[in-house]
Image (cartoon, rainbow, N blue to C red; front, side):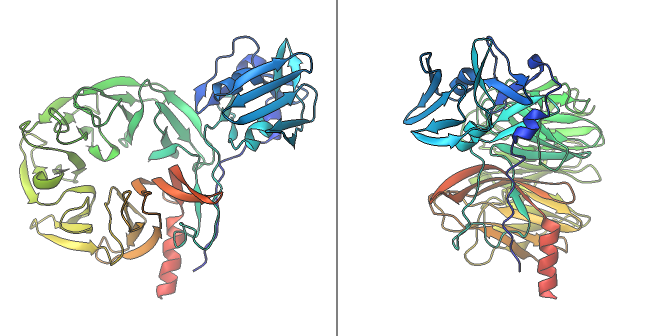
Amino acid sequence: MKFTRKLLTASLMSLGLFAAATSLHANEINVDIGFEQIEFSAQSPTVADGHTFVPIREVFEALGFRAEWNPAVQTITLVRGETVVAITIGSNVFTIDGAEHPLETPARIIKDTAMLPMCDVLETLGYYVGWSATTNTIQISLFPAFGIDHRPADNFRHFATDYAFLDWGIIVLEYDNGALWAMQFRTGNLLKSTNQGESWAVAYRFARPINAIYADGHGNLFVATTLDRWAAYATGEVFKSTDNGESFRHVLDIEAGAPMRWNIASQNGVMFISEYGYKWLDNNARRIYRSLDFGETWTTIFEPDPANDYHNHKILLTENGIIYQSIGDGWNAQIIRSTDNGYTWNIVVRGLQPTSGLVFDTHILWGLDGGPWHGIARYDRQTGEITRALTLPPHFAGHSYDMVAAHGIVIAMFLSYEGYDFPGSIFYSRDEGTTWHLLGYIEKPAHFGVGLNHIVSDGQYAYVDIGAPVYRDGIYSRFRGTLRISLINEVQEEKDEEN
C-alpha cells in the first residue's frame, strides 16, 4: 500500500489575502483570537498601501504579552515569559530573543498607534493566521499549526492514503446540506465550512461551550451547550435554528449535564434527547426527553429511580418508530426499548453498554464501551439474539464511541485511554458488519490517550473528532481537533490488495 504524508495547514494566511481586503473600510475589518473578537479602543485595523495594518499592542496583549514602548528608538517590545519580541517602526526586520527575522512590510505609526501586518511575526512565533472573507475577519489561532515529524516511528503510519488535520480545536460534529458544522474546543463558537473544512467562518456564538450539534434532515439545526456535561444540576441547554444557523431559539433546559451527539435522534418530526452526564452522582444522567413538533416543545418520558446509576449512551430510532436506548456503566449496563413512542420501556439486553450503533433492515450493530469483550455486537431485530459481529484481534482493544455508514461501508472506531498499551484503531465492513477489516491504527506512548470520539461523513470524506499524540520537534504533543480521511479511497486500495 502507498502512504502519502498529506497534511492540511488549513488555508494559511498570506499577505496577498490581506491585500485582497483593500476595498474594505477600516471599521469593517475584525480580528479574532481563538474566534474571540478583539475590541480595539482607539485605532481599528486599516488598509494602507495594499496591506492590512493591525494595532500591535492590543493584539499581542490579547495573546498574553506585555507591551513596552520606547519612543526614543521607536521600538515596541513584547514580553511573555522568557520570549521577547522587538519591533521597530520602519525596520525591515524584527527580533525574537535577539534573533533577527525579515519583515516584508515594516511597522508604521497610524494615528498615534504602532501598527503592522501581523503574518510575519505571528507565524514565526508558531501561530496560525487566516482570513475569513465571509466575516471580513483576520483569524489568529491560539495554537500553532501542526506539522508532524514523519519518522519511522510516525504514529499515524498504516492509517490512510489521504488524510489531513484541520485546524487545532475545530471539532466537526455534523454534516447537512453541503455544510460541515463544528464546535471550537471548549467555547460556544459554532463554525461552518462549505468547502470540506478548508476554511471556516463563525456562524453563531453561544454563551456556553457547545457539546453537540444535530441536523434533523428537515431544515432544523440543533445545538446543545453546557457548563459541565457531567453536572448533577441544570446546566445544559438546547437551541434550535430554522435559518441555517443564522439565528437560534432556546427550546429545552436539560435538568442534569448535557446530551452528547450520540444522545440525540429524530424521525419525521419526532425527536428524542437523553441526558449523558456522569454516573454515581445524585439526580444525574437518567432522563429522556421527547418532542412531537420538530423540537419546539418537550416532555420528560423516562426517569428511573435515583438509586439506579443510569448513564445514558446511544439512542437509536428504527424506521417503524421503535426506540432503543443503551445505558452504562457497570452493573446497570443494558439496552432498553420502547415500541409506543417512549411511553413504556422494557429491557431487551443486559450486560452490554454500547456507546454507538447503526440500524439495518435485519439487525443493529452496537459498538461496545467495554463489557464482555472489545468490539461490535450484532442484535437481531426479529429474535433479539445477541452475537459477536467483531471481536478485536490480539494487540487491539478499546471503546467504540461512534460508527458511520457511507456507500455501503461501515466504519467503526476504537479509542485508547491514557495508560493503555494498545493503539487507537479504525475497522470497516462492506457487508453490514458480518466481516471486518483493519483500516488503520494510531500508535501512542502509554501516557497519552487516543480519543476517537465522533465520526461524520459527507460522502467523500469522514471527519473524525480526535485527540491524539503527534510527534513534533522531537517530543510528543497533543492534538485536539478533526482528522479528515478519504475513507473510500483507502478501503478501495485495501480491496484491490485483497483481490
